[in-house]
Amino acid sequence: MTALLLFVGWCVLLVLSWPLALLALVLAPVVWLLALPFRLLGVAVDGVFALLRTVFMLPARLLGNRASPGGR
Image (cartoon, rainbow, N blue to C red; front, side, top):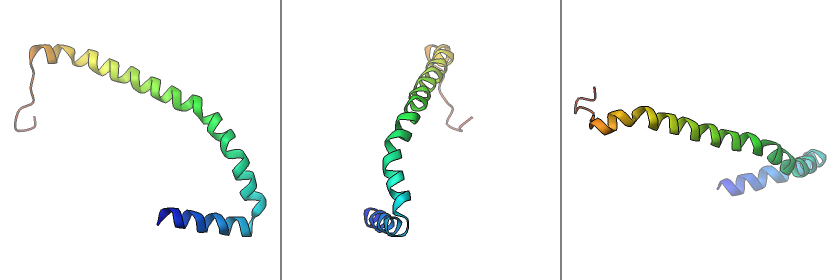
């Protein structure tokens, strides 16, 4: 259903404004290439935060700290 709506939307866009559709078709790879470094930076920052969380939680894991059944 989503693919059909996307196809119909693309056809309407192409009929109503074909220069805009062609521009979007040409610029999509350029935008993807420009966004790629930011995505890589996001993955790296997420990795650093995961490492920091693991390091800070290590003493509790070594001591065997478990959550109580009450959730506190």
